[in-house]
Image 1 (cartoon, one colour):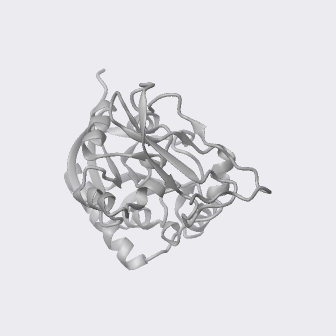
Image 2 (cartoon, rainbow, N blue to C red):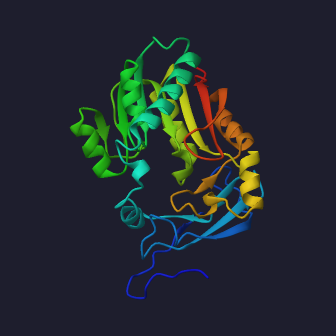
Length: 276
């Protein structure tokens, strides 16, 4: 049975996508209907139903609508412990160290340093670890309490979207760890990351992978948590993600299996500079 918000609380509807957010095709078919009301971050007033559709044009899988600003404010008024700076410090920093090392090796050397922008820094482990490796680290997050905490710790953190972030100079690395699937429109976000990167810059992205065996196994057992993940708007497979990255001016260089979450992938890609 689908849980409904109490009648005393106005239910916010999702803002419907008019077309596929990746290819603009207007034809799509519903494939999964999930109940998000049991999600740990669900609150009365948020839409409890998630209707996942597959684009007929490019096969991208996404929710039929996204949360408006008021609904996002309600959602972001709370956080998972794993989204809080300082959570699981030892294990999280170990995973972050491997990510920073992978990214640095694709760049050519772990000793290069440079500027690193971490979009949606969450528990702060990647931001702080990049700093420890010698990068000038800057972090963005939409949870004001997390930003305040990182600032208290002396880090350059901003409570803003990637689109609205203003900075002088470019970055050598932009990381979006388990972030892109949260954004209503991934292509403008990737275009902004491309613009913020130096010509030899590197992009790191991670997210659930629909193409993975583990994903298919979870589906077969009826235990796939991502269909009811209230913060997610997109489900990518490796093939579709690679096509998107290449379309947006990135060349995938390294693939890995994420140790952060089950059935997730990591991709390191280099920027392809626009023709002059």
